[in-house]
Length: 587
Image (cartoon, rainbow, N blue to C red):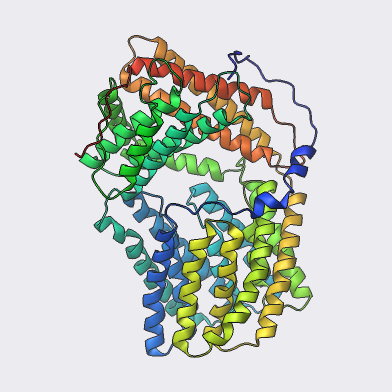
């Protein structure tokens, strides 16, 4: 990277649309290309099967398969929180269950009070927008708001009476409580599993960065800077996971030491002071052992490690204190406030879902909620990603109806066959969706159609025709709304992130230059700078995929990232060299 200093002040910004990036973002091939499966794909897949099988088979035994739609709402909560440490996962999944029940309650009450299709579509669109904002603001992670919207929209168009609502909600909460137990059950076998995976990812990303750090004069589009961005994000995620994991244990202490080494490789990947830990093979060996089921590797001690671990404990104590919890709530409220960058996406969701639903209703489609869910599923962080999701959703649903047509005769052999088919497609959806969203949709579509069979058989041609029409109309109107509702706050978010990065970099430089600064202050300043660089890259990537907005301050963005990485590298010598003989042992 260049050593050009960051100049103070903001450059002039030309108000021109980003047409070249928009045109590049329309290429379909990258959107449909398959990727490697997630390293934890089997966890949500198995969890949703176990969480669904018990309620499904119970209702089958008592002959009430018509109630599966309500238990499924709770069972699907087992899909959430698999990347979180168990202490935080317990709170997150409990919140998901309560949020699912709240959305379902609004839908059931609305359905019992009115039969007006116009009102039902309006409520469904409003619920989809609220669910989108809440999931993005809380950063609950995949599968995001789509499951909530699927459940609440389907319930809007199901016949309902007020007297039935308490019993139906009780089924959802009961199935949700069982899903909560399923999501937390692995803690009995491997208490630090999420932390181990997060640290393994940080070590692997640091190894890639160490193997190809890139010369200092490289352009930002070259591999080196991209590897540093990925390593910064992985190291930051590992620290966040460890900070939220609960009280320190011997295993977590070893994990913290490993992140110290990964961080040293990331902040100073080239030769020089502080770069001794940047041995890609050693980092990969540690990652493999950390991800496995054996003892966590014990890295060699490095000067400054004890001080950094002391700083981590201090940060953990602050986060758990009352003031720390208040700060977290204030941060959440800022993400939900009037100036939130999430607001344009919420407006897109509201308008797109409403247009899709009303258009399908006008054309006489009996299930406009499918169009609402299709439109809601499209909205990602920016238009470029929403376009990709439009292609993926459309292709996946169209292929999925063909799979449904093939499997429908098998599902009608017996009620047990129908239950088994639903469980199979639930597993397949989670197993495939990490390869690409369209591949997962091929399994999601027949599962959603088979759910209707629990209430009674429907003509196959009618189901397939409605689903195809809803998919095409929902995708078209949903993406049209995304293009009409501009997001001019994306560039403003970049400018705010630039200011925050400049402040974090200045604070880190002051602590490095101050010989009286405590090691914990330097480490805390370095982690704050890393977090700001991750936020800056996320804001830049989001804004780069938006159309019809102010031009990005690309030069300032590039200069801020370069200066931030130089400052991170300058912190490494203060901790001292970390090069020691390899040591991969057990605690």
